Amino acid sequence: MSKYAGYMGKVLMLDLTTQKTSDYPWSDEYRELYIGGKMMAARILYDNLTGNEAPYSEENLVVISTGPLTGTGAPSSNRFNISAISPQTGIVASSNCGGNFGYYLKKAGYDALIMKGKCAEHTWIEFENEKITFHNADDIWGLCVGPAQEKLQEHLDAARGCRVKCGIISIGPAGENLVKFASVISGERASGRAGMGAVLGWKNLKAVVATGNHEISIFDREKAREYNRKWVEYLRKHPLAGNQLPRLGSAGLVSAMQMRGLLATKNYTFGQFDGFEKVSGEHLAENFNIVNKGCLACPMRCARTVAVDGKEVKGPELETLGLMGGGLLNDDLAKILKWNNVLDELGMDTISCASTIAWAMEANEKGIWNNGLKFGDTDDLCQLLEDIAFRRGIGNELAEGSRILSIKYGGGEFAMQSKGLEMAAYEPRRAVGQGLGYAVANRGACHLNGGYLVILEGLGLYTDTQTPNAKADMTMIFQNLLEMISATGQCLFTSYAVFPTFLVSNPNGSVTKFVNWVIPYIGWAVRLLNKCPEIICFNLPVLHHPKGMKYNIGMNMTMGKFLRCGERGYNLERAVDVRFGISSKDDTLPKKMTHVPQDPNNPKTVVPLEIMKKRYYQARGWSKDGKPTMRTLKKLKIER
Image (tube, rainbow, N blue to C red; front, side, top):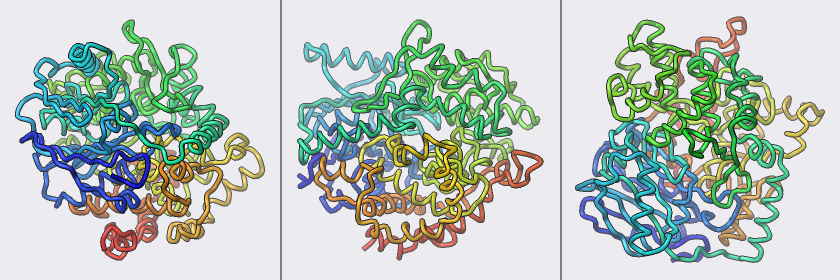
């Protein structure tokens, strides 16, 4: 057990081959160093993987981990993480998810679940407190996610004679058929990226169900309740977390991205889409949204609910709107609503799927792969999505993702991926710091793991979008911050509120203009903070997370310690990737981003990647080939 509240005190190792379990040792020292979530998973993988494991192998570990704040009532604290070696990238991948599974895994008594081996038959697993039951899954194998989850709920209800409160994660046909970008779904929320669904599919694991009656402890319940209330109030008053997200969801970013030239269009050929208004968050809210929904304990309620084929289902996020809208030259929002639901039911990542299709359309246009797909011609896309999930016809090839296709047919310069993972919808030639983040992110071209510097480059503030100055240091500090927030079990949208309200709500004010102007000149100061975060031995009123840890968990935390923990987690995950061969040669972007200006009349509208990479490695304490040095690993207590 732990001296800290919030933790259940148990990490379970489960061998799918033998169905045997054992307790995995996890000390309070590790809780202090790695907190939970993806950082916890990275340490487990670091301690158990050599670099010789294949994604589709019994040796590949699947780590499902919660954060200490998961289930405590802290705002937006329902998250859980899935990590494994990815079949899409061949390196460590972590995929974060909302839904309710993390909460119920803790109610069953577990902080994390580690799975190795492979089930002998199609299987789903039930966790009821300490009781673990393996069930044959032949009756739900082949079903889409919704019907499979309904059948599982019916089974539990019938077995116990009442409505059972539980958390479910499951895969769809895409995971069963080893689509490289298959997702794992919890309720309506997706652990979408890097093919975690395919790993479960290879292991013959259709679903995991968790239920229990364990209490999730709070360190100081009265102070935590009062602090959480003030935290929620602060979020609700913030222009991003309290206005834009509840009003329009992440879809509200479409219009801002269009205005700034950030909206990936025609496979990132352009940064603006003429039909953007028809796929915007405003159009979605006014004409399609039925009601807002939110994950457990979330005051932002950013999820949209729409009607598809007479049913109320989850609406699309920004990435889906951008990449299946302008990315494919499609301005029919009703189609996107349908595709989004089909992708969720089949269990596929909307980002990688849309980007792979866009690559195929450009490959067809350029004559390197005659596949019949054309930009703007999307009437048969539902059929294509099913063909990908079931690996039929050209869908069998598209299921491999854009990197594998570009190796086979050529066209790597417009395969919009890094390390095998396709980019999000933010066009980096108008946000070069975001471009750096795509290239160096541990799991591939991820906007969040990359630090989400686009928030400074047009979506919150508007600093110089083309300069490389200070971008490396800002990327590092943002990555560390987001790494730590994720490890606590909270949604990264809570980080929006780090930007003071007066800066965001008054973009033309003299103070905001000064801040935008000065950011490129303060790289030295940010680097000092990155090097010695302990000098921030206090907490800032805009960053509530450290005090949230204190009152909810009982773990003393300052902003400096918070950032240092995030730095430790980021380097740890990179260190595992290094074992699998990752180095500077893999921190790349397609040539369309680095050599082809978005604006033909402005040669600066490319990503100056190599300049920023060099500065980034120096800031991180990595070698010239992009590897954490032993000195850095020892400084962070990863190695002793």
